[in-house]
Length: 359
Image (cartoon, rainbow, N blue to C red; front, side, top):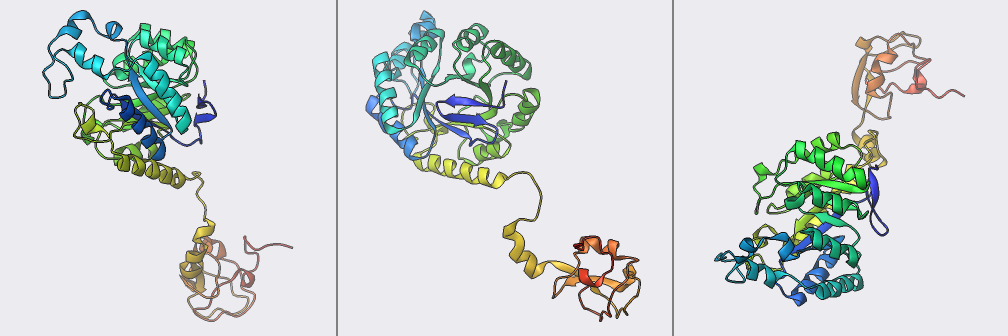
């Protein structure tokens, strides 16, 4: 197991690699392949790494009664749920066309396989990785079949418990070393108090040898940016061209300008995370030169006097003297020349000063 692996050809995730940003088009294309292509181009232009869809083989995902039940929602594309889903489902040939278009545009393309038959098709389609939606995360036969395909996997965890996620980890790990788990809450749209970003750090403790990420359904971008600050190595957000369109996902999706802002904000936060090494940086030199304080003489100090703390003060001084953090090292040491009150105590004035460069 590794904290980093190749999720897509030439694109590593985890470790110090940039966060991988998945734009979930899902079924927000309204069943129109031209809209789907427009959305692929949009997410590429916004800077996302991957355009993702949802592929179902409906008779394998739903039983007959589920497909035949009346569907009278305002979001319905048909009289029954089956008619509704068939309107939104692209054919295998259309998926091949979309994958080809994504390659032309220059963005990675994949889909959530919503049932085992769909996973078989996506494997044949040669997607770079499988996305496991939250609805299949506790579907252990499905997980085993998918993991055995030996493609990288991204596993969402909405509607699951930590106990279940431990089983998910062990099940996938047995067959496939290259996978990551995303914290997710399955509500659309998602309220801030239900996001539970702290689960990211809990996952990092529970599963320290795989990357951890975040799949969000909230409004806006700040929570997803916060997830990256907590260490999310993959993020996924739904996208749309119009939040008023028919469909339950649009309200929880990002418009193009929001996606572009999210990408830019994530890249800014990544730059801001730094190395974790605390030290004075070159960019701080100007401030230090102007405002950094030094040890100065509180009173006149004659040559040869042994310094006491009562003789010393700390001020912004010219020239720069001994830094304040070393003031106690000066106590008991002698000065090699007279020092007037309010003058800097420089390294050269103090005999055997610890930081004095020896020739």
